[in-house]
Image (cartoon, rainbow, N blue to C red):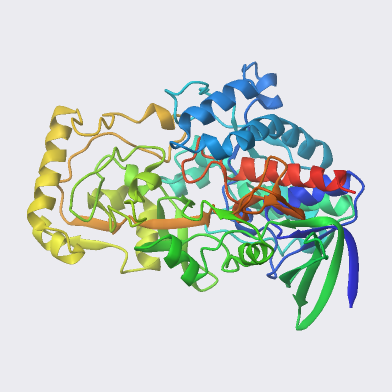
Length: 535
């Protein structure tokens, strides 16, 4: 069987659906293929925090911002040496992001609102105290029509919006918060309305359906097809036991997600311990392999969204639930030498934990969060994590016994805790300048407690703090048009990549809470526009 379309989108996450909507709005016939039986990918499982500089909501609120200021901020935040290969993409990102946001609100039922969060790297040039973080308002899943119950479920409660998660003390007082919000929560239950990633995917999907996009489930692309010049002409697809070809006259967008569920790829690019994964099990690097077979150069394969998480269960699997349990005032992070190595409230703490040596091997792992019994009293999601995976938490009445359970040196661990406790008594962290009160970088986000409080009440606790991966960030290298490149820098005609299946120009080091979703949708938008411009 031969199927023809103009634009073929592989993957139904935020990047793929945005690419589909942009291409369809330009008049193209668009087909979206989703490998699994659920729509939305990792985006549907996310909190849908969305970082968009110089956006129209900020302007309406009287917040001054510009692409130039955002570019200065990204340049200042970037790891050494990245500007040489990524600066053109940063420039396109800050220019296209505001247009993408306005486009989505004009072509779908999505409506975004600002959150109170600042740029977390607040001391850098171009940082803003508010205005770049947004999240979608809740939407009824009925808007997704026949796909209303095909949107992927999350490990976090979609009944609450992202705004409610950061503006209330939901993580520390979930039942009290639910009681305070019960009228609106009841209304959402009655109307099948949800927030966060569910709302994001619902709105994008509705926009795509209204624009005539064809969405196919359980359709896995296994090979890209090429003409005699090497240009991409479509894909071979397996769907419900049959195989057929789809011809895409304008091109193919790879938006298949990361490769974190492929154990061999994960071990190759992330040697050392991995705690939990927080993405769909279908994220096995299909797009990476197809692109590489077509001649694509892969880059940033050691980058990922590394987020502090507690274990939970979803569809019978142990998975990652994002919870910043490491920021409690009576918690510290120690490395394999039982030493602290960073301010625990650092925004990019995952990058600190995953620091590598010259050979690419981790220098700190395995790491542990060390605390005492009050953490479980204060943070219900941590207690729920113990129920999901009883092996996750180690308890002991002495530091020496805790060290024996974790494999840490007992003398070093005792010394580290005693030193931290002395900082708590003085209310000054002389090693890493951790603030004695809640960190201003997390203002507006009550999930993060911060502060300095001694670890002294038995039983003492240890929880692994290794890589919990919500999505890898490496893949085919692209140019500023989201076109996939060969190693020599030439364009593979007709092939595009966006989202977690492309070489992310920001990498592990985020510049805001939403520096996955916002940029991913932007690159999908750029790809969709470029498709419409191709002959």
